[in-house]
Image (cartoon, rainbow, N blue to C red; front, side, top):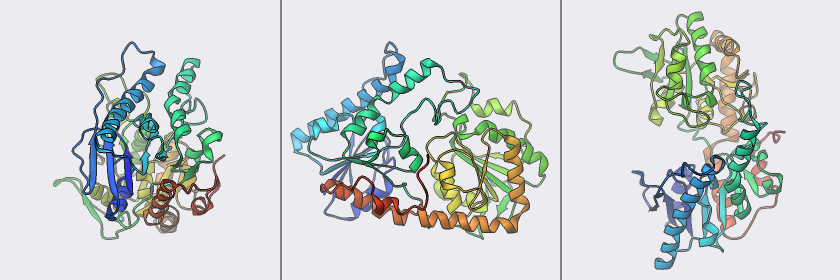
Length: 425
């Protein structure tokens, strides 16, 4: 089978799927993406570059759409040339319509099924936008957000089938298209992300050596930004460190912005909040981004892990923390509450209440014996519901079925039945 994957940042969500398909020598796996140093054995890499950024003269509602069109147009040109000169026609195309790469895929391959990753459909209320009452949504914002879904709607229309990683993310898509979107999470490697009672971490050669049982609190975000609760985290960290003289906090992440508004030019959210809180920097450790293996070791020694987020896409790190047996304190937001049940496999706290967050962390640290049951349940739930070894075959087989014209029924019980949870309202 000839499979074409699409994502501007190879491998995107498809690292494990690619590995599975490449194992079979009968498969030809290609990936169309922007230039990068990433190379995967057995994968034919096809690159494209966009000639420019959206014009500053384009209406601001349409700049997001123009960027998508520019990427889609270049992908169309590259694949059209490949088809014309080499006769390349895949049996299925697998991609993320949110970037625009796949915008014109049906114009190149009208008879090839498209399998989409439907991660997020924007709303002006009930999700991320307007969640923070201090940042009110104007009528202008509502119109801009509606327009931002233009290429998402096109993707939903031309897709033959697709997936969303959580039931809540699935529920955000227009009802008319939900029946052709299955709910399958990307999957967590619960073999690598697993408890290790002998784990030790030294952040630098002169720093303390942390081991399992120490008062170590962790926080992970790709970037330190409001969408991932950084302001609440910093205020909670101040109280935690003052209340607990033996506690250390390890914050993993970068100072860029992935989602939402950027801070004023010339500063970062971390710099802004360092000026507002009083932290004992001998026990507050900002370590930047870490290689995966090192990140897992940090989680293995963590006594309490904080995961805060707007109602938005769910971070893999929150589930990897649960898989390693962390006691996770998560924000009481969707889709976190789809994964964490308060007092059962973790704890839920008010996103905007740093004092409550800090108090919950102290409760976890003070009740080590009682927390073991919570930790064990967290790992068990990851194994039962979100284990890569279980989900990857379902994901792979669904792609094969769609490629061969066997579309699932509107409600795929085989996949959705794996989960013991109700779709979020």
